Length: 300
Length: 156
Image (cartoon, rainbow over the protein chains, first blue to last red):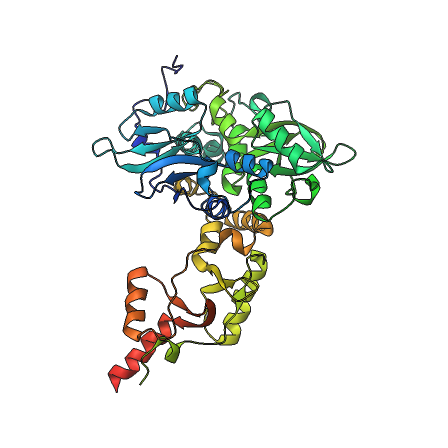
């Protein structure tokens, strides 16, 4: 069932208001190696595959690439070996709410958009784009914390949400000497986009994301290599008391998808805040606002 | 009279390997620009046998530096551009030339007629063409060299 707030920012918006017009598409016979190059360069989480007649035929996500790496598929393999077919489509005139519902019911984070009249491919609608749209609305609101600071110094008496109230407080980590194979097992078992790497004392020392794994696949790194050799560091963190807008702004400005949340000591990680999880609960910190969030059930 | 690609191509040029870190490639851009006295906007990528693997152009690097949520930036006047560039610089540390290069490159052979070269450059919007013989790169034709050569001919 559709679960939508009556007052919802996304109401009355159609897919064409939020979609991206640039669709990253490759022929299904193109190698994984080339596919990863395009994923990295265009900073997208999935590619649309097309057949020889340029008809959309499947989707290859970073998760699929990680699966190929885990299974030991050669990097020269064509995308068609791992693509998920067929792609899911919506139409440019569909309501955003209907599109989100379609994503939710299929457990995916993107749809490809067909023109309502000609049925031609005109764009892609990815979850992060909608998150961005909500953030934009929130930024324009006069009650947004960042705007209040700008206009009246520090006289904001509103009770506000901090990262603590929105974050996921269970954080998994892997040891620095565990293999990439076991990192991939953890990521797919919990459906995470990234996992924290901890040193021998349990202190966080790096992060491995699906993007990092696509890169190590391309670089020919053995899946038995230890986590610490490919992790990225330092870990992007924020304080548990930080206001939500500030945290989301930080992620948007630095192209990070998640912040690990520390309390007191920077090494004391108590939670994780992902950009899309944040928007699922709310984009801003005002307690009164019910409009700037995406109301969808958890994908499972 | 210069009539073919071979007549105006340059034969001394830098190349990169797909495994070269992008950070090092950026230094090659800067150093070669200084040495050749012209701003370099693209470098050929080859394998160990001098066979063409791709091209790393200015656009490939800029595309990688461009923030993912660029469409939101118009509404944020308070962003810190220095911080953004630092973040991009940090991210680029693990990126190799092969990760972001353009693998498909238009090439010509040494005997290609200059008017054909001109036509390809216009139609494909490319500013430099690797000249290939027996799968090996023997030179590069720059659009600026072609342009200047043609201007000299006309003003004679």
